[in-house]
Structures are given as structure tokens and as C-alpha cells.
Length: 444
Image (cartoon, rainbow, N blue to C red; front, side):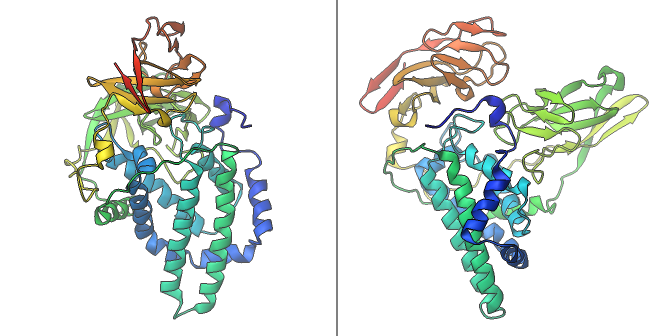
């Protein structure tokens, strides 16, 4: 039986025993310091092939409906910005792995990633069945093995053998670290035809992500923005400003001023409105934590919020922010732009019952209005998706019995009738009728 974690437990930097468990499994499979040294010795080879490996990884995920669904916009097209964000995290992880340093922080991060794919993660709406995690670890293992063979077979066969052994053993440890988070959680499989993906377009995105991570991207220029008088932001407080489509949080913290992009790396939550304890800023949506002075993600310092230089002149605060980017061309990631027939016929107000497990929620649309669908012990209910307090996404909240909690400020509602159970919300949410026809549910 899997024990549900509290919100505080979900946002910790991985299990306290992650490092010990990593070392235990490493000893069990025979992974030693010699193997870590072999991984470090082959690190530049893996670095060379990372854009290709990452592009193949996400091409594979986009082909299959159960994994593709997590990368789609409301209109069914691929969310390229989110796709590149995931590419960035994956690239950083394998670059970090190729460095050959496997300390407690590394183990905690793997544990954190493992739980993020299960119902024990920070976001209850993201669940990746264990079979796909196992498959993708094997996918990367094969890609690394192929790269090592190409580069070393003729010039250094001894290193090839040592590196192949080391990476294979490490993958066993990583897979066990990821798999143990599932416990007894298993999801039934369903069949669907894979899509044809434009792999060249995915490779372009992966290369762009890789170069951006190395600081090789070009800025189109900057503009100076006046924030206001310095004394308008008291010590320990912040000010949120909007520059075109860019939301920025300006903090007065421990005598200094810091400006961060007000968009969480996880799901774009208003991170700069979250709680600040010491140097740690916590996103109010799913609890992702950052160092407010650097913007770095606590659980993975290689990932960070965009920061902006702050200057004080004549007691006035000024920011240097990038000029608005040129309109990004929408790449054709699918070789055929029309989705498979089964997905095309699914109406926006409909959902598969199997996609909404008991205690879970799902977002659908009724006449362009976002609606949250809830499975309460096998019975389905629906309310407006936006909290009546400040519009928080109820579909991303915690469902406990008939009570849904807004992830933004903690307002609670009864999903069966929309009534407010706990503030700060003062008004109930609108409810909708859910009609079940076979394996399909529909909001009316």
C-alpha cells in the first residue's frame, strides 16, 4: 500500500535515504569508483552526442499517445516551449551524469525525478506509467552504447569496454532509483497507433536547447525598464512588474535587489508570488523551490529562472531586460499535421474514463471555458477550472474526497455542489453535469 505524502514531503529535495540507497544499489550491481572514472573519461563523447540522443528521446515520446499527451497544448498541437524546457532539464542531467560525480545531491535528484512521475510527485496531474520510464532508460542506454562504439571501437577498444560496462551498471542503479518510487502503483495499458514524427525538427529543437544551455545563443538586444523608487519596495518585500509578455518579480532581499522571471520552470506558475524563507523562494503552485539571489532550482542547480540585472541610480530602480523576441516559427513536429483518427474525433468537452483515475482530475473545455473533471470514488463531477479567488487552476489542485484545494492560495470547494469549504475564496464555483456513455465521459 502506497502512503500518500504531505505537500511538505512532496517538495523535499528527495528522500533522506536517497544517497544511502544509491550506494547500496551501486554496491549490489558492482558499480565502483573505477566505473565512475570510466564514465568521466568517456564524458566528452557523450557530450558530443547529447543533442542527437535528446532529440531521439523526445521523438520517441511524441510518437505514442500516453507520453505525447503531456506535451500538447489545449488545441492538440505540441507545446514547443515546454518541450524545450524538458529538453533543457534532460540535457543538464546527462551532462551532469557524464561528469562522473555521484554524490548525495545526485541521488536525491534522481529520487525526486522518480517521484515526479508518480502520484507521489508535486503535481497530481502528471503520471507516467512505470513501463515508459523503464523503456526510456533502456532507450538512452542503447544510444550511449552506440555512441561509445562509434567513437572508441577503433581508437581505444579498452576504454570502450570499460565505459560500456560502467554506463550499463550505472543505468541499472538509475532505473532502480526511478522505479522504486512507484511502489504498487500500476496503470493498465491501452493500445493506440504511434504517430509519425518529424525527427529533423525535433533535432533542431534539441540542438538549439543544447547551445542555449552552453550560453551560445544570441541576444537580440536589451531595453532599460524603470521599476520605481527603491524605497517603494521595503526590505523583505517584492514588486511584480509586466514588460510586454514578460512578468518579473523584483525582490528587496538582505539589502540587495534581485529580479527573476515570474514563471516557474515546472508549469509556468507565478513563482515570484510564493513564500520566501531565508534565500528559498517557493512556487505557490507545486512547491518548486529556488534560490532568490541566483534563480537556481534548489533540487537541480544546473537549472535556473532567468534573472535580470538591477541598477540603482538616484534612488530609482532600473532593469535591463531582453527586447521582445522575434515571432518564433511554429515547427511541424508531426509529419502529418492531422492527428490519428481516434484523437481527432474526441471532442474538447469529452474524456476517456480510464484517463481520470479515482482521486485524480482532468482539464476539458466546454464552449472554450476550462472545466475541471474529478473522479471521486468512481463517480465523476465537474466544476469551472478557475478558482473564484484569483483564478488558480483547480485542475492542478489536490483532490481529497469531494474537496478540491486550489494550488494557488489554498481555497477549498466541494466538487459535488461547488460550495466554498475554506477561504480565501468567497464565492462558489460553477458546476456542470457529467454524462457517461460507455468508456467516454462528457461535460454538459
